[in-house]
Length: 266
Length: 266
DNA sequence: AAACGATGTTTCACAGAATAAAACATTGAG
DNA sequence: CTCAATGTTTTATTCTGTGAAACATCGTTT
Image (cartoon, rainbow over all chains, first blue to last red; front, side, top):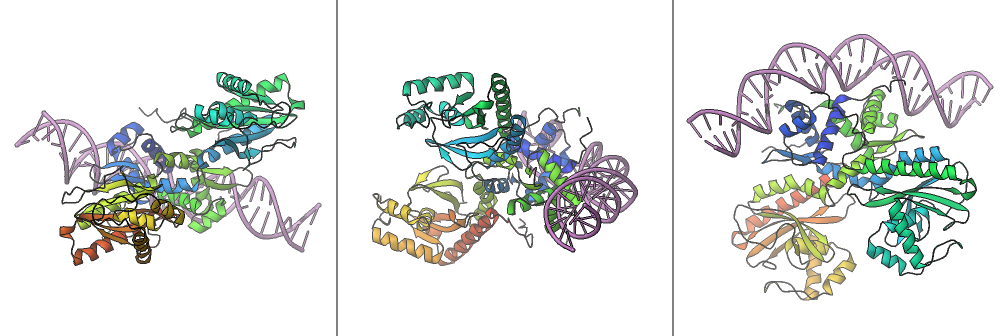
């Protein structure tokens, strides 16, 4: 275990910690922040001053309390609607692809369609339905079905009241059976399908939870059924669930890596 | 000139400048960033490293290029949909209220309604329609009419195809006259109304431009007509236009005062 | 293929900047 | 009016951020 070299600039890191603290609980004063972060008042004061000059925090002039500033919002909008998700998922998708050697898909729901936000191509090139930027059905495909399962009941009803196209002989088009499938997905907390959207393909999908606790996306491992045995079924599932958990954690307001937090300064 | 104390922490300020640079032009490498910011490569490298550990920037592992990270998005969403606008406008509204001693309103459009995002009460308490969080009409009120004037033609058509309630005898309910009024607003670049929503009240409204160049909100000065003379008409108008420009500038991707840091002292 | 140039990464010594502590100012409560 | 709590400012010391330059890596050119 070679030491990971610490290039971290402490002052900057403290400033970022301050921002996180303000995001976590806004409208705090200097003293309160200093106490909860284990910093001195003067330090917090100067950090806030610096952040304020650039609009990253704003100060209520009367009450001398601080909150996140408008510039955070301006920069955040640069990322676009799904920006946070995409940026959070990017490295995790890379890792998942490397682990499984299979295709990896990040899918969200748009109304009654699924939408492929991003993909990673596995080692074995196989032509699958998933393609970044592509709309797909909700009632077929590992990630899509999972999103449907966790969607609002009204969305499920609306989706099931549409004609259900059969993409392969294995596509579930029977509404009662589809509802059963959705129920099983919710019970399991994941979804594994075979051949239902692409003939000869499997898909192992896990749910991603947004900052508000709702399920906002799915990440899935997909490949050729020829390479899908019991052993891989297990490993892919675990990998997908771990990846989903990792992304969900990153999207949570508290952020990643609580473990290494500096608390030992007592 | 006596410098009013510089509490700025240089390291933090540089990090923030780096974030701004990445927001301005993403997918830059270390060298490119160092050059454009006038920093050394090693410094930029370490700043990026620090920012990356907290997810504020993300690195494309293959191409070694950096972009804003997901954490920016997570924090940004904390501000809510209109967060950036609200936070950008807050101090400007305070200043405008102090300048004019009148009520100040920040209004956006929501479909075919107006919505009061925030208000500041002037010295003279007067009961007006505007109240934070309140929906109002689009065809009456200084800020609302201005928003309608700059809305998409389809929105204007839709708004005019609805019944036009007369809030006072002065409310414009004639569709042809209303279209004329909208045209004049666009020609002027501002809007001044009297008594059209609240009897006995004036409103001087100016348009706020978002980062994408479209008009996203209005800021207005409102009060009792009894205090509205030619002189105040001019001063309020100038103040409103200045305030709108200031907020628009803050919302632009390049941010405020690139060339000269004009710090308004109170 | 070898040499080059451009870019990212790492090391290191030193100036000066960030920091903690404590004094000072201000505000609000009892 | 006094006290307590908070924000602001000052200052001395140390430790950290910094620039320069060496090193590594990669893609391109000759």
